[in-house]
Amino acid sequence: MAGSIIRELLRIVPIAVVVLLIAAVGWRPIVRKLGTHPVVAAGLLLSLAGIAIVTLTPAPAPFANPWQGWGCIRAGWEPDWVPWPFTGSINGRSLNVWMFVPLGIFTALTGKNVKIPLTLAAFGVLIPIGIEAAQRTLPLNRFCDTRDVADNVYGLLIGLVLGLVVRSLTPLPRYVRQ
Image (cartoon, rainbow, N blue to C red; front, side, top):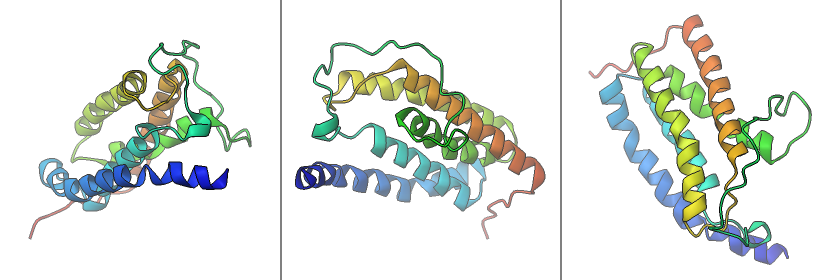
């Protein structure tokens, strides 16, 4: 049992390496284009990389969806409004919320003015829809669920609020090329 789980997890290593390499190379153009601090640019890309690794890699066999491609679970759009750690329980729904909080924080901290984070946030709302579409169509053996979209957007909004609070309380260091 443990050996099969380890084998399944090792399948994602090449994907994780590629995604992390893209993040390692991609932060410089973000710093130059948006005038944001390198730490914020790296945090933004690492958040996206983590989301991609968790959601777009094949599901381990014990968690595989035997009905891949048959459709999405249409369970409503209600997010898990009281996510862990507020309830004290960890489940797939609360993890879907918290996975997007760092992306929201770094999105809010990106750029010289508030217009840039708001534009990025609009694209951030589309990410969960793209993830569920990929899980529906690609052979990843993953469940496509409408609640995941709601939970992910809720996490993004929590992160945006936290990031905007930090942004208003502290002057953000800007990257100035010497």
